[in-house]
Amino acid sequence: MENDIHRERFLVFDLEMTGLSPDNDSIIEIGAVPLYGMEPEGEMFFSPMRPYTIIGADSKRIHGLDGNQILDAPPPDVVLPEFFNMMKGKILVGQNPSLDLSFLWKAAKNIGGDIPHDWAIDISKIFSFVFPQNHLSLDAMAKTLKIRTHRENHNALEDAIITSKIFIRLVQLITKRGIYSTRKVISIGKASLEYK
Image (cartoon, rainbow, N blue to C red; front, side):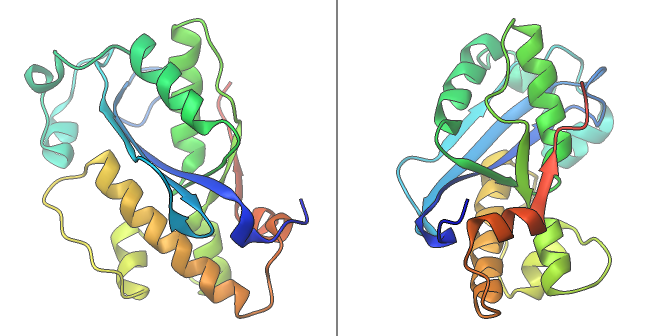
């Protein structure tokens, strides 16, 4: 891909889960922000999703959700096809997307489907390229880049919006270094599905 990074379509996404194990935990929210020309384009995506597993105490504390609040959420076989359709023709972007992709892969298998992509651009890798240091949280990256965040609980759409702002800012910084190629940005930030 020798295209200019500013001419690509991206889908910046985030998931909230009941835990960190694709085998034992479930997705409970999906949020996504489509970008074109490094600007938001079209409708954002947000949906709670009924989990297969029980929401633990840690997840309740982080997300502010419990099982009763998402019992009425649509099931994976309704949410996932809509989200996967939104992925088509776009490059995925996330923070630590290998974990999210693993959950999507497992959830897709549970409904007899497959995910459209098995890789994504990881903003953490691009951040480390621009600011060589240890891995930082989403909030710490936003603070370093002077991006304002205000949230009481983790929410997939709010995190996707913050992730999109970080990605846009990082692309601005790497283009100042003469990096405009989509292929180069992917080589810096590519993260693949690790779970199969």
